[in-house]
Length: 77
Image 1: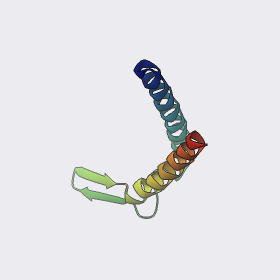
Image 2 (image 1 turned 45 degrees about the horizontal axis):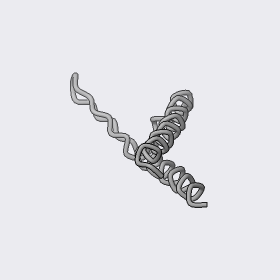
Image 3 (image 1 turned 30 degrees about the vertical axis):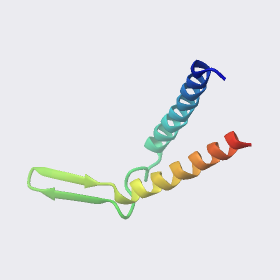
Image 4 (image 1 turned 180 degrees about the vertical axis):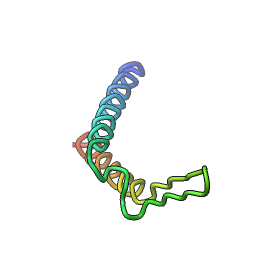
């Protein structure tokens, strides 16, 4: 397999991954609790505010790990 063919396959795979992640983000934006989970922290001090999506980050990390493991499992077959 030539280097260009390998690079082309990698770019296609990254494109599919970005497409799936984009669809997930668009879908999560429509879910009422998409970014407001119980472990998220929102601080307000006067005119300044800070939002730390801790639980949302953990949930997305677990979801991304499962999706990537599934993709790697399918590629290895």
